[in-house]
Structures are given as structure tokens and as C-alpha cells.
Image 1 (tube, rainbow, N blue to C red):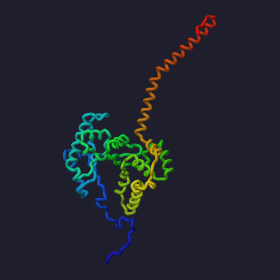
Image 2: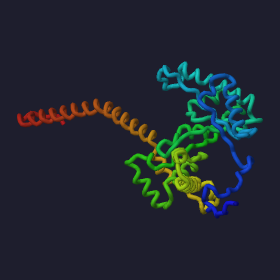
Image 3: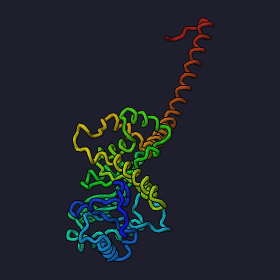
Image 4: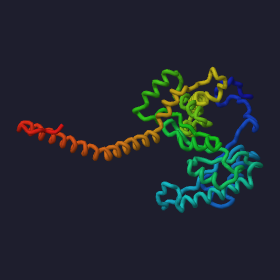
Length: 321
């Protein structure tokens, strides 16, 4: 006998789904592993393997990481030591091989992954104009906005892709009340404010969903799956609000005062400013100490002179004016 037909709810994982979007509607960006520098052709083979696994002939973007530092390398704050030069040599070997063999036929844009400003400087100074990175992928949040890297990339025409942590918990406890007052004033989710802040700084934001996505790997029932899918759907709707509202009147916007408030949560900048303030106060105290000592000596001399004049007058002696 034929099984009975049942109506399946539209939001059930068993319901019919629309077909996936065509390749022309997708932008595929892949990330190479940290091992991609272990040989002149390692990155080429890894990229080819990624495309074969995805079943595509071409990638829109490819992220190349910086080689890892040696475990026994000494601290090098100026990034000019032997290990930094070794890292640069390995990176450029991989970078130029990818450009020569894959760009633009099989990779449309070649970019970097998690490179700081000093690393990008090393790359740009040794490649031709058409070999410069198209984009740089960074990880950022409201308290660590990577200001120097963002500014450097924007000054050199390199696009920024930001894996953005939109959690308000990154903000210092001493400043969280200011953020919550702003949230109450704007009446939107914290993730919307933080995402819009990043967009208005010129960063193409990709909301970080690793924690939520990892929850889906431990589900044991259809009910749990449906609850997780609903949660993910709501988070995506909130965190990509800036992508779905192109009309200016409907878009969440931050004026200069609000941007300045959000920028003030930069923990690194605040720590630097505190350090500079302490140093300035220390230098000022050191320089003023001899001045205060001299002032005390002059005051003592003046008091002694005044007392001597008073005694001379008591004795009837003439005191010069």
C-alpha cells in the first residue's frame, strides 16, 4: 500500500526548498591554510583542491595568510630582524606564484588575510602595481577596530573585508552604560549599531557567526534543529540589516557624535592615550622640580632680605629703596 501523504510545515527541514542560487549570483572567496608557504607550488595545489571540492572552475577571491613566525625568534618590535625577512621572502614567493599561474584566469581577486599594516607595507614595496593586494581580510570588534590597519589600507586603495564580532560584551564594563544609552535612543539591536559603525568606517562587514554555527553540529532532534535554524535566521536578519535597506530613509545611520562615541571604545587607543598621559605627567613633574626648588629658594631669600631690612630700620639705619 502507498504511504499516506502528509502536509509538511513550510519551516520544517523536510519541506521542499527553492533551488540554490546559480553560480553567477554567488561570490566565492576561499582562504588558504597556514601551510600554503611550505613549497613553491603548495598554494597552487591547495587552491586547485579547493576549486575541485567546490565543483567550480574559478574563484572570485583568494585570501593568502602571512607565514608563521619561528618559535625561537626574538621579540622584534620594529619588524626588521632575520625572521621577519624570512617571512616576507616566503610570502612573496607564494604571492608571485599565485599571480603568475592563477590570476586572473582562475582567481579573480587575490587578497591577504589578517595582515597588519607593517606586513602590507612589506608586500607593497616589492610587488608591481597590478600585483598589489585587492583586499585584506581582518578580524575586528568594537573594542579592537584595527584602526591603523584600516587607515593604511584605505590610504593605499586596498578594500577591507571585516569578520566582525557584533557582541556588545567586548566593550569595557566602565563604558557599557554609554553604549546601552545609545541603543535605547536608537531602539535597535546592538549588532545593528556595531555593524553600521563598521560599514560607515569603510569596512565590508561579514558578521562572525562561528559560535552560532558551531551549535548546529551538536543537535540531536528535529525540534532542536528547527529552534537553531530559527535563531540563526533572526541573527542573520539583524546583522545584515545594512545589506537589505539601500534606501537612505530606511537605513540605520550614525551621525558624527554617535560615531565618535563608538570610536571612543577603542581599547588599544585608550591604553596608548593613558600611557602617553602618564609619561607626559612624569616628564612635566621632572622638569618642574628644579623650577619649584628655585622658587622656594627665591622665596626664602626674599623673606630673609625683608627681615634684615626690618631689623635695620629698628636700629635707625637707613635702608636703600
